[in-house]
Length: 164
Ligand code: PNS
Image (tube, rainbow, N blue to C red; front, side):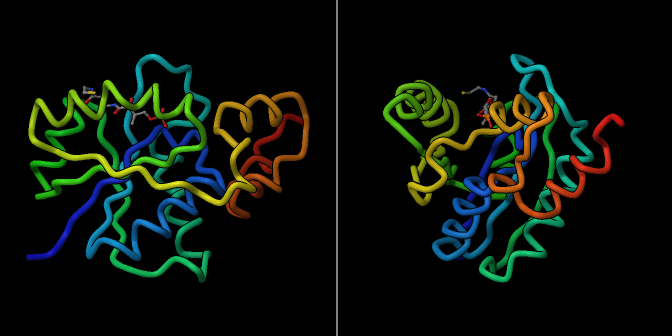
């Protein structure tokens, strides 16, 4: 039986830390669904379709990422409903610090309780430990250079959409 995992997130936008986690997940599982999930608690910068497109481009342009990777989005219903729909029994989350562990723990337990879906934590390269989508959004909005923190496709996109 093939192992199917879901890497969920807002990906607003995808960062080099996310790509590192996706690359690692793709070496462990037969099929990896990178799922853009609408998070109503966050003020989004990019529409979901743009986030999906940037993920697809970023993954395609990264020669280190190989494997069976599907990029999709999920706006209505539980994350575990998507897992059931595609036959995934594992969620993969990137963990940068103890703060991430504390934030993720109730969701891990809830997803296990709801649908017996387990969560695996992967640690990205420490070089990406300070990189988050929210800080990238803030630095970009204030005119800073974010090319060190995001895939080239995202840096190009943010450059072309920057107000003159
Ligand atoms: O990149 P983010 O914003 O940290 O990702 C958070 C996300 C989308 C993974 C999280 O908000 C989530 O799991 N949403 C799914 C909503 C859900 O199913 N909730 C009930 C069980 S926890």
